Length: 88
Ligand SMILES: [Zn+2]
Image (cartoon, rainbow, N blue to C red; front, side, top):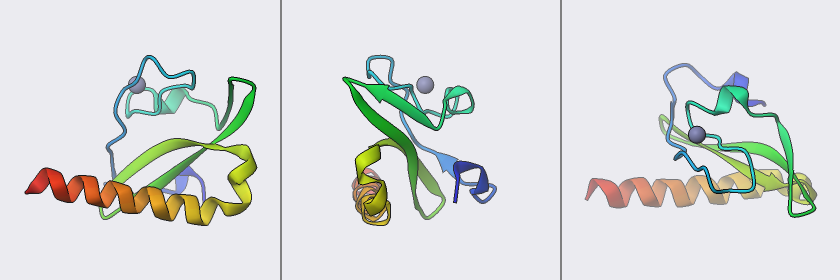
């Protein structure tokens, strides 16, 4: 499942980040970002985690690709926690 398969109406909550060695994945920059990148000599691949109607895009180490399901699950959990905290 790629980012293009995301259901309509899901909001990209990824913050804009100029400083990261990796391409920014915020709402404005995502359409221009490649699906893979390299930083500090390491390979990364783009991934995302969905929580309710929110989606967070992030770079995952390519070597974790076999474990992507778990990585996405933990990112989604962290996102849910962050959103819940913001509401209270
Ligand atoms: Zn951006």
